[in-house]
Length: 99
Ligand SMILES: [Zn+2]
Ligand SMILES: [Zn+2]
Image (cartoon, rainbow, N blue to C red; front, top):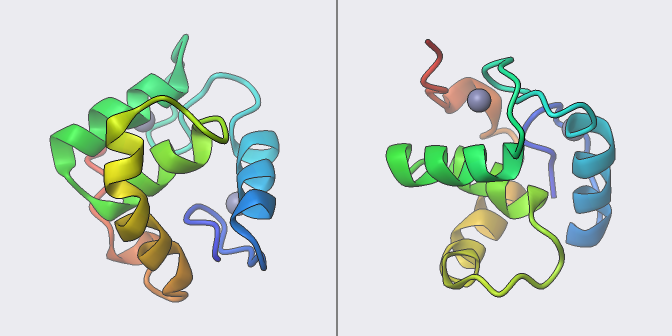
């Protein structure tokens, strides 16, 4: 499992989730576009729906708490895990939709 933002590798999804939340989501600023949001997770969710990219789905998935009551979370789980496991295909492949 590779962090889609910095490329750090983890053996487990839960380890990667802790890393993502503590390193990349500390100050309410989106690590991709640099804008401030009251709820960055919601911002990732919107971007995931808007772009339908595995990258934003992965950010949303990692930002969410462990077992959310969210059908979308379950729906994207397989795709996100495949994306995170496929080391080397992170960051540079993605169109971030920067403004
Ligand atoms: Zn990272
Ligand atoms: Zn953003």
